[in-house]
Amino acid sequence: MSEHLKRLSAHGDPLEELDRINDFEAFRPTLAAALAYADGAKGGRPPYDPVAMLKVLVLAAQNNVADARMEYLIRDRLSWLHFLGFDLGAATPDANTIRLFREKLTEAGALDAVFTDFDRQLKERGYLAMGGQIVDATLVAAPKQRNTAPEKDAIKAGKTASEIWPDEPARAAQKDTDARWTLKFVKAKPLI
Image (cartoon, rainbow, N blue to C red; front, side, top):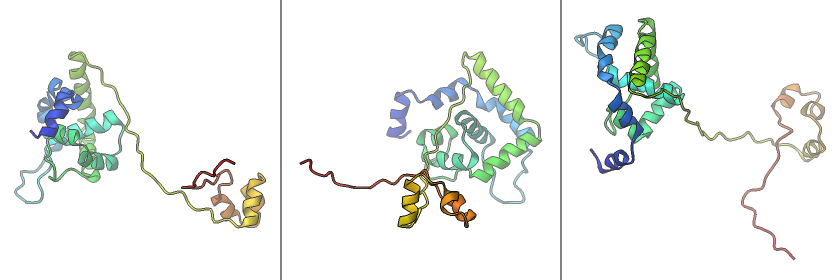
């Protein structure tokens, strides 16, 4: 275990606690029966460990995260990599793999049973399964308005987009007349 992981453990990594109180290996027979993976004789990339993939679904459910975001977070979070049993820099499941795993369990009727059993294990050990949420703080650039001086004056006067561009409904639909402009990196003016 790396020094960094030891420090995470020393501060009480909640995922280590989850791994300690839940016997994830107990789900392996149910997962194996539901997934019915081939023996690998035909070749191809071997599937990810079903217990690790179940842990992916648990993390996604607990944090209310979509599959595409899970793909990123698995690679981004060292504690998640450690909990899932993936090595730093090794291949990790992508969004499509996560989705297909969930769908296969659902089609086999095993997903609800596995999560019910997971919740039962938690309750027997005195824990309550609570979902959280990771806030996706993706930055998206706002579109530039590119209004003429008379259009800006009309906006400042409180006119709506349909009043400013009556002959251009498509353009009016794309304009935000409630937006306000700010100046970046403006030096403070000296008070005199």
